[in-house]
Image (cartoon, rainbow, N blue to C red; front, side, top):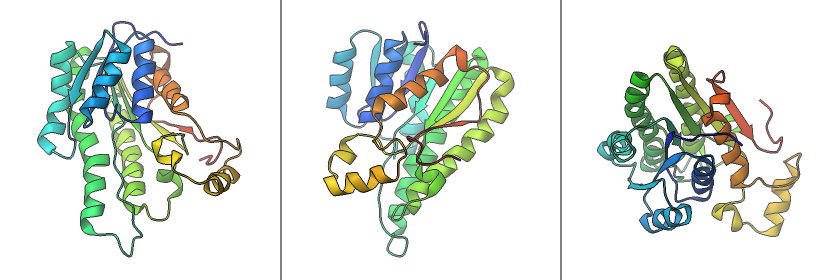
Length: 245
């Protein structure tokens, strides 16, 4: 679909359903791919599936020092870093009245602050080479909110604002910064839904179906490509029409 031959990409949260699909899409387009996450066995399995042009880069993004060094490790492993997909995230759901400070802080630390630390380090090399793609995976809830997810919604909305600022700062350096905001996607998290819950979800989606990780990965592959050079500061919504900002 898009030719990424010779490009080096780092995907955080690559052991998850969406992260794995993104890594596969970038690799299929010809990129060398660094696979990062905390589940080393899953990363090794994915690397074994993809074969050559892969590197396993385990990282716990809740550790500030590890997050700050991840992009440098990717550069060392691959010789360069052209594409960063900021996908890793956690949730600690609770109603606002009951949400503990540690639940709020844990989600902001990993989903927003750690992402910034990885981006900041990646930008240094990209700015020198005057080419780069920063792509952050946000969520439909960053636009519409969601009961029980004040922390998650705040982190995702914050990531979109941060991305716009980075897009403004780096536009003259050949670096774009964009987001992809998935809606309800078929992943391990949604597999646990009952049929009744799935039916209620589908009623809220004009397409009347949940998306797939490949739907998200296709949007990422486009934003990572040379064809998307004039697209920056934007959010591509992959939600079946559920939210149309």
